[in-house]
Length: 98
Image 1 (cartoon, one colour):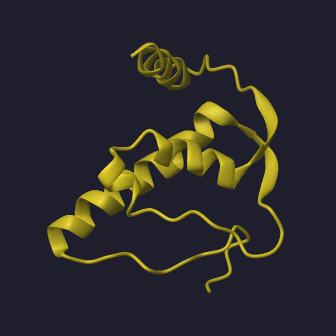
Image 2: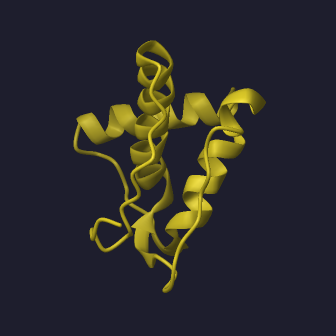
C-alpha cells in the first residue's frame, strides 16, 4: 500500500512538472520481472520474460519505467481473457520483431 501511495504521489508531481527523475542503470528484464512478481500468481504464470542475446540495460528512472510494462501487462492480461487470445509476439529491446 505504501508503494502505491508513493507512486500516486510521484504521478501527481509528474503532472505538475515537479517530478524528480532518479536515473540509474537498470536491466529492463529485471524491471519487467519485478512487475510480473506483483501479479496474482495465476496471471504471473501467463507471462514469460526472457531475452535473446544482449541484455537490455540502460539508464532509466525505475518508477517511471515500471509504469510502462505494468500498463502493457495489465492490458494484455485483461484483453486476452476477454477475446480468448494469448499474445505470442515478441519484440526485442531494440525494436526488431522476432
